[in-house]
Length: 251
Image (cartoon, rainbow, N blue to C red; front, side, top):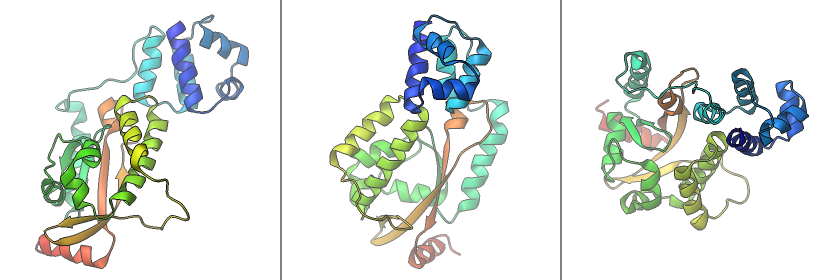
């Protein structure tokens, strides 16, 4: 149980909880929790899941803790064509389609494009991005996208903040950690009070479009890939952008 204990300790430290904090939250003694971390005690499946719940460990992390304890994982990563996922796929398509004429896209855990609506396809296609491409890699290394962003430094600051939040949620992730290191090396920490709206301003066909975003995720799914999927809905941050998007859609 040494591997389980090490993984449990890592998650506890990520969540900045002491052994006493976690033990009290889970209703066990600090002594028992210490024994679990050192491998002197073996956890039950119920105990592993209870600790995960108290630490708000995401599905992939729960699977890791369960398998480290020698147990079967709780979450499956199904094929996208699986019939069970049909309602979720339809929900994603509905959100993307209904959001037009504003851009919308679906992204996986590592910011790879899973689906886009027509306005997002136009916006991203102008900088060479399409389904399967990584928005994260593009922001850190795609010259066309970086040149198209009028307020690149602001966008990078915002992305760095979002990635730090995602790392705190997911735990260790080499892809996200590498992106954070890249951005930290060239981004100045913002000073002073942030604006109420921090838009991303894109140059497209000689015009500047200004957007802010919201992100939606599924709150209840037993599938790992769908639980990690982000649906990003972009909204115009000013009247001019709104009018340009409406005109482009013929409305």
